[in-house]
Amino acid sequence: MATVTSEELQGYRWRHGLLRVQGMEVEVLVVWARLSFGRVQLEITPVSGSGRTWVDRDSVTLISVEEATNA
Image (cartoon, rainbow, N blue to C red; front, side, top):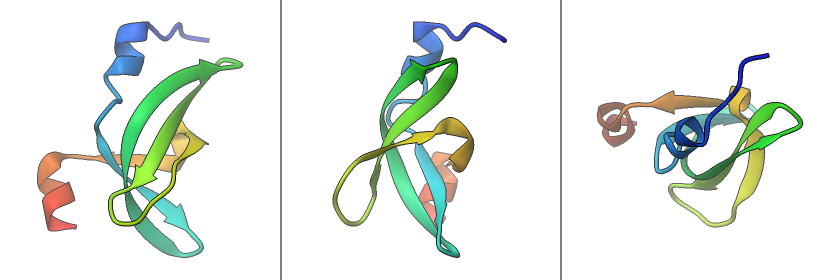
């Protein structure tokens, strides 16, 4: 298992991504990142809407700023 550094975790913050929910893709913003039992988890919030939740990194497709503005 590869070691994840605190700098790598910080690199996820404020990135945009897409989360698949019941057949839809919702644009989200990564608020925080942590390592939990060897897995990277992201705290995300929807770009439009409210609330926050923690999800596994693999469930979010990170996108570029250009993709986020065109989504």
